[in-house]
Amino acid sequence: MSDLFAAAGLDQDVARPLADRLRPAKLDEVAGQDHLVGPEGALTRLTTGGGFGSLIFWGPPGTGKTTVARLLARTTRLNFVQLSAIFSGVAELKKIFDEARARRRTGMGTLLFVDEIHRFNRAQQDSFLPVMEDGTVTLIGATTENPSFELNAALLSRARVLTFRALDDVALDKLVGRAEALEGKPMPLDPEARAALVRMADGDGRALLTLSEEIWRAARPGEIFDTAALTGVVQRRAPLYDKGQDGHYNLTSALHKAVRGSDPDAAMYYFARMLDGGEDRLFIARRLVRMAVEDIGLADPQALLVTTAAKDAYDFLGSPEGELALANAVLYVATAPKSNAAYTAFKAAQALAREGGSAMPPKVILNAATHLMRDQGYGSAYRYDHDEPDGFSGQDYWPEALGRHALYHPVDRGFERELRQRLDGWETLRRQRRDA
Image (cartoon, rainbow, N blue to C red; front, side, top):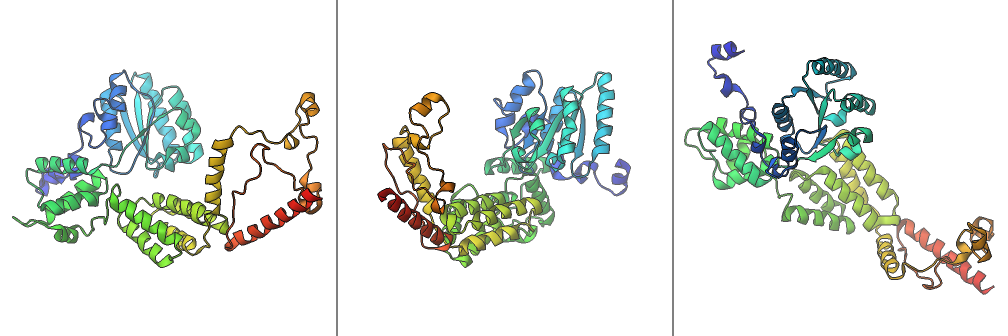
């Protein structure tokens, strides 16, 4: 391969991508993960304490998961084997396990790094269990998805989950500085454009270095790009807001208020702004579910089903196709009848429970589990509602010490209009049977 580069007049090292040439050689060089590889980091303690077991690396793309796995193999002198769950199947896993067993008989251990491990199905995940248990391999699985939802409980019980964080602006700026030192020249950007470049990377170190290469290639001698020129060069606009700062909270609040105010057009506008700014799509999905239960509630019980289904659809389709499912959910919750009656009832019930949490339920509705309890009147006069006229006994279920309280007040909108009628009807029957 080196002869091919020489024939083309290229330096082999220069031909390698910048992200590869700048790959850390030691754990403490990994950017933005001090909680793992800093002096008091979890991985630092593990590697200095005599070794480690199987691990799951959970975090966004471009945060160093593959790099750290390679460095751990080098630190522990384990044979490093890498595969991607996207392109691998049972046959390849069996071959790797057999090779690891043979290697183990010679005294050499195997560190098996599985990228996108959540892509393996349940049966494939289970195939790792025996080789993890007997020490044939030390598994490091990398995933961008929440392991609690995507990985088998049996696999998780045999591996420690370590969370990788998206690189913050400070870590990304340091990475740019390291790239400049390696290239021996400054980034051809003015200060505002440099800050925009960091935002464009969106916490992804690999993306930052790829963008940096594009900029160096595009710049003419002596040329310095401002933000507008930078956008034209890389064909990517800086996020409209910082997801960790005011813009994130302002647009989230604006979306929620537009939905609550039944303005689907404004809601779609703020939704699009959040997408364009690089907001985590699953964060938006969670907010939509929250709107369904807080601002719509039982006025339209379908709202919760629609929003959770939109989250599942996005999980299944990913971006950009899955974003349309979220857009549908935005329109649904914005146009649904609104009620915070369930939210208000829940808060009122919590306050009352704290105030009178020790009040004893009436004995008449409690089961008599023993003869003594029966003698004391437990369940003695309980009326089985299904056997009563209208399927309603009208008996009092509240503790005598508290008396009855009205906590849930359905609004006269949507499905809650029907619930209001039911409650009014039951209250009328309750009074009639109490006075009879």
